[in-house]
Amino acid sequence: MNSRAKDTPKARELSLAKNMANHITCAGPISCFVEPPGNGLHQVFLLRVRGCDWVGRKVLQRDQHHRWGLSSILIPAMLLGPHRQSQWGNEGVSIYFQASTEKERTEAFETALTCPDSEIHFPFAVTDDSGQEAVCPSDYWQGNESLAALLNADELHFREHCVTVLRTLLKPGDLVYDPACSTGEFIAHLATELADGRYLGTDRSTSMIEYAQQRHSASSVEFRVMEATTSTESNIRCEVLILRFLNAEVMTRRQAHCAFESLVRCVKPDGTILVFGHSPVLLALPWLAHTFALAIICSVSARTGCQELFQFYRLTVPTV
Image (cartoon, rainbow, N blue to C red):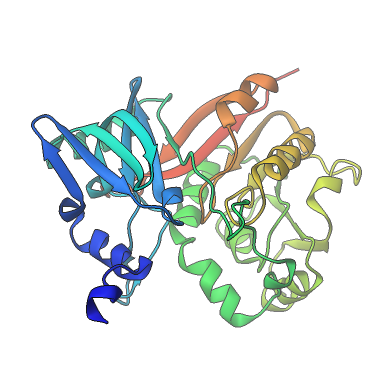
């Protein structure tokens, strides 16, 4: 029984978190990591730095309570090395990469923050038992304390970074719009920290909006029940659009692209679009930016003084 337990996905994830090197086969300057069949392939990511694609594998991390869990924050130890080749076989996906030192991985992270064309990309989707993109059922998104705690756990760094970014951009009276505000915690935090703006949070879930209205009754945020893709038809025009729901397990890639194409029309000329989320961003944003003539200011970010990276796209809408 013990030997079989070692082969379970949970046991392997813990093993990867404790020592990635145990899962790597080295052959001189080239090493190989094999991701076996199953639902771990969506944890593989690519980090583009100065035209070079580094490959990495997200692993479990300890939270502030010393519990294992996944986070949207990536650390240098998750990098394998510059990507050379990947092959699919019966054993899974074999990923070949150039061996790298801890110093080189850390330098790659530091360089990524200074290069505007750096990007983190998760190429593989989370899939269900039938091989289709896995999406949480609609009844999962019901406003309650346990879900609020879960959603807020991996959001602190995003809230802090958004405040830092918007502090220099937001003008008095500017409208900040969160079209999938869920518990309302995120946009209510912005309203508290940046009081000169106007704030609108909408969500398709009635229970989520009811929860947000009760929890943030003293906030200046206006909360409404609304389908995100009807925002333009509702004549919403904003200076800042926050998109933190176009993500894996929330919707499919096709749905994410359709939602973005609809919502981008809500943003005024010279406005700002911020895209991020708990789970990987589904959008091919360089392609979409070119399609809608948007300028990508940055694609990755980190907290001050931390050796980390997380997906955080800041785009601007052209001035007419």
